[in-house]
Amino acid sequence: MEINYSLDDLSSTAKKILENAKHKIFLFYGEMGMGKTTLIKELTKQLGVKEEASSPTFSIVNEYISNKKETVYHFDFYRINHEEEAYDIGLEEYLYNDAWCFIEWPSVLENLLPLNCVKLTITKNDNNSRIIQLENQ
Image (cartoon, rainbow, N blue to C red; front, side, top):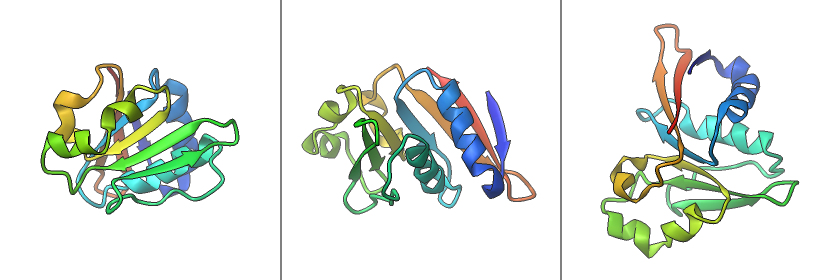
């Protein structure tokens, strides 16, 4: 599925993503500055998280609780260099407890990630809008 959007469409785009996702683990691919964190902030809002999500670049993972008492994890693996570092933070426990997981920069962890996930690849159009390629795996 392909979704074209701009910042003005962010709310409806996040809603469409959640409606079409078949899994709770989301992998975000895209160059720096593509809006991965901005989109994740809107997704957490759509899930009923009251506090504003922020980038966990230095902490690696942020945890939120939705108004439905669902746990939402936001990972940023930009600074991870080896799979062992993900084991050190207990990645498997996060991924296999039925929580929502939004993962930025997942490529370094490809071997550790579950097969059932939603892959989102974000690219930029000439007019600075974005294209999301959404694949349920």
